[in-house]
Image (cartoon, rainbow, N blue to C red; front, side):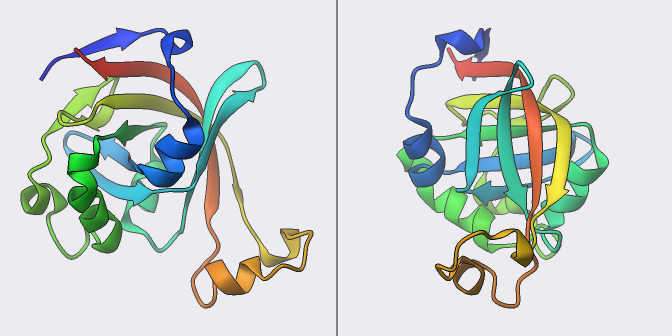
Length: 169
């Protein structure tokens, strides 16, 4: 498959649908060693005069160590025909299985990090800032900590500049 690098101003999509409904694969590492995970939480916008993606990764996820220890990561977006692949990557750990072998995803290098040949769009992100979410950060009493965390650890948020946008030719 071939990709074309475009200017971010050319993008035309609904981020609520793209992230929240269609999901994305967050991938950290290099072609030598990487891991990917499915995410359906995130934001796209402008911060510090930069186009940014904010994503959230729990520290017990295998992908966390790759994103945490690198400067770059990618967010890959797929068509609906890849729903089962994204479901698998969100429910299985790369510590316990080879997600690439199990799903047939084809990794490829994009600006020093990893994206996937089957993706329709890949955002290449450079980390700018991170912070840890905590229970005492919630300003409302509408049950979010109980509903979304329970005994699971709180996420680390990564705010990253989008330095490359690739779309399928």
